[in-house]
Length: 206
Image 1 (tube, rainbow, N blue to C red):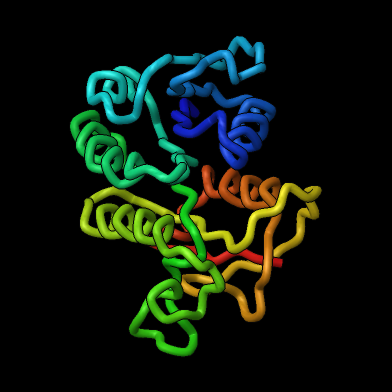
Image 2 (image 1 turned 45 degrees about the horizontal axis):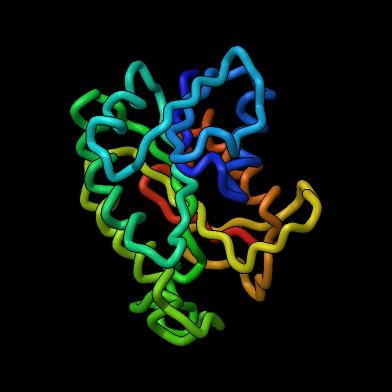
């Protein structure tokens, strides 16, 4: 497959890049700072650009089969501002499938199912800023015609890959406390060949 990764220099994105290249797919990475990518692989194309640049997104999407966004919030509104541009460009080029990395805060609350976790106080995060950004992305994708999946990890330590974890549609697995960056990326990678979770938020935790 030909896959575009956004956020390839981030923690989850870096692991995704490794998994996807090791599986033999062709990867395009749209990044602001190409020097941060240390890979030298004939199946990797690096495009220097910004996700807020419509032309850069359109160029990066050329002949792409699937998009993976591991963009994070970084204290800005880049995440929510870029998604409308990504959705529009994907629709213009007839690309249907997108997998994104979200946050457990945008899953449904178990105590108050009509609310999201970050809205109900179920989430232990003191700040809701990142969750609000991810919520905006969820709403944008949910109102689009794309085949989207949002992987929603809870606390993300840089611990080793275990290869065993729990997932649940729309909710965080019961008493889930953490999930490593590597295992989150591994699960997102597994969705590339799957159509089991279209238009779904997936909670992931140990």
